[in-house]
Amino acid sequence: MKKISRKQFLLAGSGALAGLAAIKYATRDRDINVEYPEVKENAVNLSKNGQSVTIIGGGLSGLMAGCELLDRGFHVTILEKNATLGGRLRSWRDKDFGSPGKGDWKGHNIEHGTHIVFPFYRNFREFLRRHGLTLRNRTVNYPGAAISFAYPNGIIDDRTASKAIAPFHAEAALKDMKYASKEDNDNFGIHQIMKLLSFDPSNEEEVRYLDSISVKEWMNSVGIPDGIVKAFMDPLMDMATFLPADKTHALYLHRMIGSMFGAWQDLYGVQFFQDSTNDSIIQPMADYIAAKGGKIFFDAEVEHINTKNNKVTEVVTKPLKSGQYICPVCGEVHDVMPERCRRCSYSGKNFIVRSAAEPANFRSDHFLLGVDIPSARELLLKPSLNLSERYEKFKDRPTSSIVVVYLWYPRKPSVKGEKINWEDHFGDRECLMTTDFPYLGTTLNLTYLKPETFAGYDADIIETQIAKVERVEGMTDEQIADKIDEDLRNLIPGLPKYIDVRIMKWDNFSAFTIGSEAQCPEMDTAYDNFHLLGDFITAKHNCFLMEKVTVNVRRAVNKLLEQINQQEGKMKILPSETPNFLVNFWRSVESVKA
Image 1 (cartoon, rainbow, N blue to C red):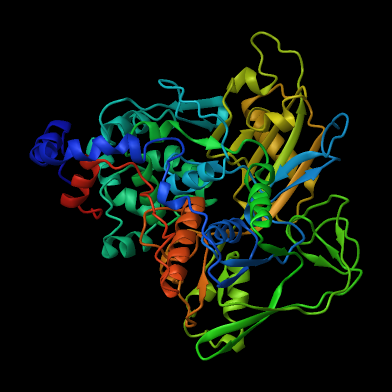
Image 2 (cartoon, rainbow, N blue to C red):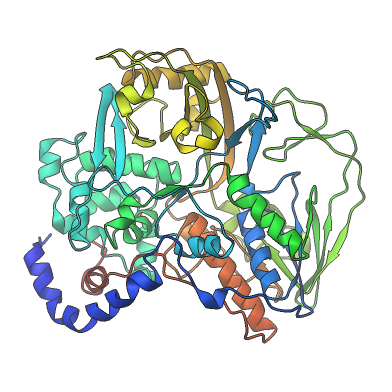
């Protein structure tokens, strides 16, 4: 492979830069590179247009679509099959975990897993702005660590970035990894970093190619050593996709890197929700929908979708039997009161006893399906829809599984020179990505990240994600907790004994395995008034996860407006990356292939 220096790269683009850079950067800060972008044309409050929409699913997709459509004059009905809203952003209260609170205390907030909001989630952040919602204050601790890695035997590697012109600012974050050999670090240079930035999201051939090859295979093909893959990419992919680099398709890596490397701030501005996802975004959206006249029905699992003349005419919910017990976390139905949920392992005492209910029919002008992959498969492949051929590939679309572990460690007095509590080894670091531990995955200190819930306790509440779920199959909660505790003691030998544990198992996250992009369905179905939402459908927009959900909601809203010939209220979709002319120029002259 031909190597290229900074000087050669800058000389190659200097002529074009002179003509266009001023235009690009004159508008960047005002329009995009702010914490909460403002798009005035998206802020509308239109009168009723006489059109109705039924949305199946009360997760992020369904609730966000409900908010946007109500603002544009639609009558909105949301059907949620569980007793609570939120989908994969669902959170709940647990009064039995750890130490109890005081006064009118509702319980500790527990979630599927802590959710990251990247700086380049610009459409998601614009939605937050319009609804008066904010994230935890952004701390840009330059020139400190942008991200931190933890490795066995106590190794911590803080990765920084410089304020050099992008993409050269990223070299510091990728060079001289502590867990890689000197030889591997010496063989990883700026020319390979430029290869990481050569993906053109609008190039369908490159999309197909990167979907067909793993992160590890692609990195090896461009000369990036295995030591760099293990030290940097394995923990990054474990955090983002719950899969190692040899199982994740290279397309995901390039979508992420392409979004993160437009400006140095993109590496430093990672944020989290203020506290629980329910309090931070789910309940505020539900309240907004109710205030605008929208309706939300719970325990409303769709069983039949009826059609006529290439249109969906109505959906019919399942009848409910009395005396069944519903898991408040994942919605699994049990005929007898369980000690723990058979699907997600929830073991709280507040399983919901539901009453009997007859099937209900919901008729609308339009229907949107905003559910996870397992639920979407079940509905789209119903014989009555006659869509089995259309979704032949989607029926095999994989999902990722993960085990989330909460451990409550009471703090002990610190002793100089000893590692007893989290801060003795990790200081004020909130989140660490890991590799080469038997069980320990991405690990966070919720005492720092969720101060409204946990800061009042003299304890470290540790969350870790076990992506290697097959290693804990058949284990009890205590056995899983002991395995995680053993890995943590490799880093903090003097940890006190944990006093409590919560373990949740999830099987419905979108997977980014090799070939999975080709299995993604389109937004449109065979029925004119029936469209799909979510992060697993295709979008010709460089984005993923919550940002992709937001982008696809806006695409669906615009599609419905076009169908009824309503011009007012059309939504603007922002780029989900910082515009950078040097990066765009490089994409135009270099191929992502070796």
